[in-house]
Amino acid sequence: MAVTSSINLVIDEIKDFKTKPSDESLGFGQQFSDRMLLREYKDNQWQVGRIQKYSNFSLPPSAMVFHYGQEIFEGLKAFRQENGNIAIFRPDENAKRMNRSAERMVMPTLEEGYFVDTLNTLVNLERDWVPRKKGTSLYVRPTMIATEGALGVHPAGEYYYFVILSPSGSYFSEGFKPTRIKVEDEFVRAVLGGTGQAKAGGNYAGSLLAAVNAKKEGYSQVLWLDGKEKKYIEEVGAMNIAFVIDNEVVTPKLTGSILPGITRKSVIQLGNDMGIKVREETLSIDFIEESIKSGSLTEIFGIGTAASIAPVGELKYKDHLHVLNNNETGPITQRFYDELTGIQYGRIEDRHGWVHIVE
Ligand SMILES: Cc1ncc(COP(=O)(O)O)c(C=O)c1O
Image 1 (cartoon, rainbow, N blue to C red):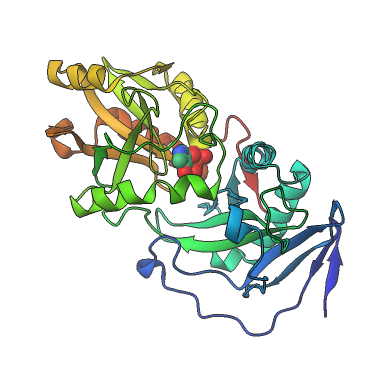
Image 2 (spheres, rainbow, N blue to C red):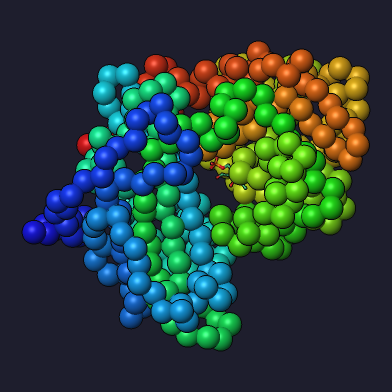
């Protein structure tokens, strides 16, 4: 029997439940929980949403997402805190970014309150799926696709908004160990005026060839340079990037072609809180290499929801290989990791009201 919730949501009763994976076996994005949220947009408005069994869609082969790629998504995490609370990190920021992506891709926006409240209800129903082992979480993937069945390059009139949940361990197979990154000097991810600052699936499709080539050489992700001169640092495949130079943190300025990360925004605030200066600047790859050579650049770390704070142990640009901090996690990287994850897991006070307790 379906019930209607206070946020105008139908909640299906489900009967058969999956066997949950053990916390030890968790990778990233491999298993999905019992329920999902689905809301349709048609006749120029959003319809009543439904929390239903995680199940396949049936779409016509002409659904516009398959042809013109109108697809956007978000990524955030729910953490099991030490006192048993389930906490979602900054969902209001994801709601805002999803709407900015929707506007860029000419898709319908969602009410921010609806985005957050429905995530709360879904994660609450699925709270047993939030793993317990240190460093694990429930990854939350809100997505929007164009479902109208029609050909012709124009914005679709029908969409699905859906949310799926995936219990997750470490994003990188190597865990919280320094990762190897290759600076991409052939392909580019985004250009000014393009869609780089939207979280649109097409950006990721275009990045795959470089990522596959880098993997063949033993690198876990690529570091993108700007699309015009291939000179200025932008971001890594699925995270922003920061450099420790003379004990200060420097991260590329948001130029319009970089995804404005919510973890990046949090790191800037945390640096301020911890008395570590974080600057946003235009950084050339030449300057980065010179700073490594001179010894002023001591640490590099990636910043993003999936990987949280990811130390970089090796950076390769053309045929120059740079080893950072003897391939070990540096002290400033570790401080940011401890502070950020401390707030997320409830070990450190949530001074900025970032944590949404699920209830
Ligand atoms: C291309 C890209 N850059 C940066 C990030 C980091 O953003 P956030 O901290 O919001 O996860 C992500 C992940 O969402 C990403 O896919």
